[in-house]
Length: 377
Image (cartoon, rainbow, N blue to C red; front, side, top):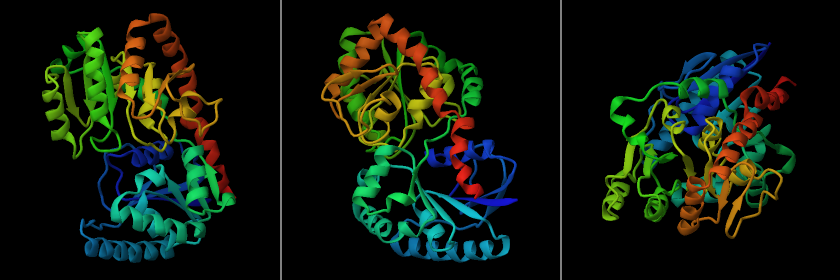
């Protein structure tokens, strides 16, 4: 029987962690799966044996180096004992630990590296990718555009790269969406609601959405904006909403264990990101049968919403596709226009509602898990 390791920092909040959770729940019983965590922090459901290395991450450079070497030593010892056939790593630090610990490393690129690796630490990681990722058995990338990026800009051998989209646990999403709202939130959804979800930080670009929402309010006065997530920009975003006179119309509901009970009650889901990998929140909203509007950013939204088009194309206005609206990146006025059209045009809204689930099914976990069958060989 094949023995597979998943290597992650935690199995808690985060997109990569959610993907690992969904993969584990659908992993074939013909393989023995163990989930190895650097730190024992778990909030997502899972199947498989949990192994914890009990290493605490540090924020300073020296601490990170110590953290890396300690985790690597513990992991190599575990590999020697357990002898896994393959190790799939999720995240930057786990990827590096995997590459230097195993000759059967499968590293997963879960973002658009040219945009997401920022600052000094990002520059260092870019150099490590260029130097060492070709050591991997496979580099699993979650979108075609991200694959193009690492081949062209990081010198990764094309034959090493395999695109596997993120899986969706649609049955679970449907069940969670049925949960009722707490009384404190019910009044919000008596109005038309625009909703977004993600870390409150630079990448997700919620400031641009709040400014676009101010324009939407001129035509749709009763509309509310709900923002799910937490992060370093929270105070700034709250101040911005207040500065624009929207403090009674923008609701910051924090990180939610079950976001789907909120999403399913909204009129439109918005992705305002500067870049992505393959945005799970967009797919999850489509699985909730909610019309979606997204900036046509790198990478992922176009592959989801306009699968028949060139994945490197970027719209210069608004593309209303069969599955959602793609908006010129960073253009708040066009974002507001697309939101307003979906709110006011019932024919367009109903068409997107009807088509959303159809497209989401392409990413259903039972379909995506087949792409991982190469680990049987």
